Amino acid sequence: MTDTPNVPLPLDSREQPILDELLLLRDSLTLLKQDRTTYVKASDVMVLYDKVVDQVRLLNDIRADKPAEQNRLDRVLDSCFQLLSLFFMTIGKNNEAPAAYSLTSTIKRLLDHLTEVDLYSEKDLEHISQTIENLRRVVKDAKASYSPKLITLLSNRLDLCHISCQNLQSKLERLSPALRSIHEKLISILRSLSLANTKSKFSAVEVQGLQKQLQEIDSQRVDGKFVIASGEVPACSDEVCELLRKCLMWSEIVLERKGEIPDTFKETYTILISIRNKLEKLSLTQAWSLRETDLYDFQRQLDKIDESRVDGNFLDTEGKPAELYVQRTLLYLIRRSYAYIYFLMVSSEPVSEALLPIYNQLQTLKRCLIEVKASGGVSSPRELYPYSMKLNSIDNMRKDGKFMVGNDVPEGQGSVNELLAECFELNYELRIAAEPETDE
Image (cartoon, rainbow, N blue to C red; front, side, top):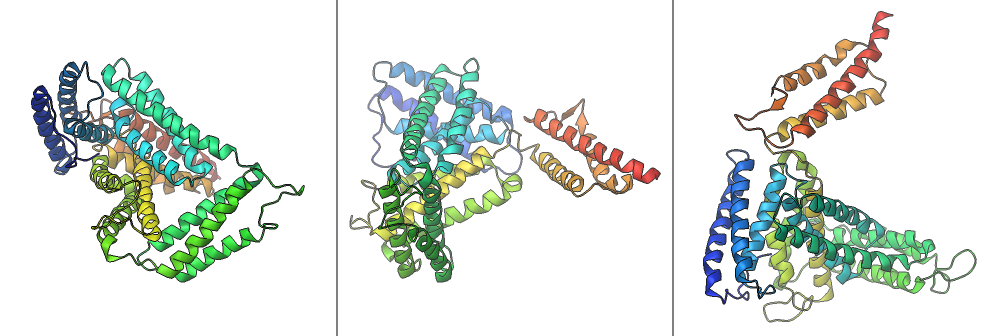
């Protein structure tokens, strides 16, 4: 969430010092996020986390008789927790309660958008549902370690996400099994059309290819309806037919407009295209280039644009709603960007950024060794020397079994040591398998 002019200042004068302190803490978190001269230390994050929690305690005392109060202080507090949540991921504390805060916000956004557009498939919900359950376990296990207020807040947010996800799933369950594959295919084509519509170079051939797929699905209908082998019309046939109609209409609009956005919405479109492209690039290079706190700025920009809508519509400078083509194009970019943020968060490894270079090297080594094994192994142990030398050099970096950075023991020791052991095991298996051949 972001600060906006229409959010009122605190009415209770006792809240003003808390707001001032939270603003300072948010500035400190922002400066820490921007500092690339060194890795983020857990001790620095925990000091700021404790200070924010102290302010929450003071606020709770003041609002004991008015818990529903909302003003600018709550927005700033939300920003602090969003940043802290991403910092917990950055330092490798992914499986601790505060790390769930930012991810639950993103999940809520995604589910709200799916509910609004009412165009989604089982695949969309399957992963989100699993993530919600994982987060519920994390929050439940953290009850003894963190503030009851934070645990209650996260539990309530996850309950809302769970209910929203269940409501969406129940709507899909009404679909006849005979139509689910067609429905999923149509959703996929619809998104492919929107992707083609937002590429830097518009390709009419690509859109026409998608149109052809839609026409092939359309040809399966009998008298305008989908019919199963027994001759019956399956449940929700009309809904799937309506989805097909929307897809065909959207393909015609996309071909006609060729990705051109009116000047009145060009600025918003350019910002969203930039965000989408940067997040897409991060999703490809995540292991080597992502600091989770970088996602905060993308979230702020997206939230601000998403919350600027009035009754779900984007308005121009004169307050007039955008036409259908513009609405759909901008909403697609917002939803796609939130989806990338979700993917980047759930893909985050529980390893401090201080250990990520070692962890990533071991991941690469493991993949190489698995490929060597899958291709038949090696003919001589000598061929494994490069892998053995690299593994031994990494192993020699440990002190008393731990990877140290100065006097600090970064989070993620278990994950890195486990991965190192797996690589040694694979290397050993390949060497043993090659020795008989060498003896012969």
